[in-house]
Image (tube, rainbow, N blue to C red; front, side, top):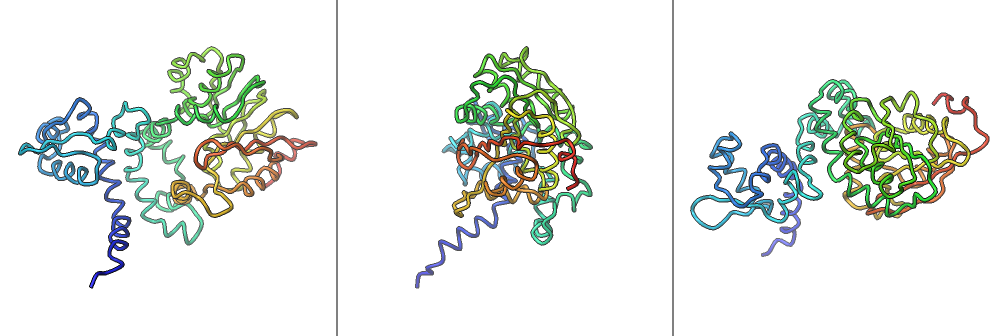
Length: 353
């Protein structure tokens, strides 16, 4: 008798063991296996010599990755492996490379937080903070290597995403864009590149923006962009007619998100716009797994998460904004455009949470 549930059980088993796949890919990324195979297939023994790995153990990793389609084992007796089209994305220089993302996903600090996901589910609080005794941002500040890996992962694919945002949202008529929490400036560089009359301000933590120069210069917009280091919980630069927060609000719970939004509101004029760019969870329960697992990741790491349009609207209202257009970008990513509500006072911005 055939077990009707056998295929489902096998699929479920693959999901249960998914952490093994993730870690195997992360180790291959750390060792630079895809870069070593970029010129063509190589013997496992050669790869072991190049990486300093234990020869037999590396072979076991390579054949496991070949079994799931990341690598291809070449026929013959030499135990030779090459890149598959899937695995090509692990090259550090591949278009849309996920190399840095794979390394970040394999970091012990991330794994520890996910290992205590139950704490977040039961409490609504950050498992990362529960495990490490501090938030993820403080951890990265105290562990520079972790901060560098995170910055590198966030930069991966940033230009491609920025291109889609600029294609979706019309920045015509804008004079000065302030990119709050803008990282190394990929999005701001794309905006300024598309609009030669626009000037920009890149604002993020000092340790982050100090690495922004090469990105802005490579895009040819360095002369039109001011780089400012600071703390978005203290104040943000004044003088913009558009304020951009991309991938910022989902890192914070409602109280902290409102603090950030209010700091933007304090320096915004009546005709200015706020653009919050995030993955948005649909109200019709049609969210893709990608979005929902980012949401779960934000819960485990930050005690925060993705939001629906209605939830964003509530944040905006509390912070002194009115939600306007919601512009689709790609998948679940949206540009949520908000306008300041008048009258508004600095006392409103400083009101207790």
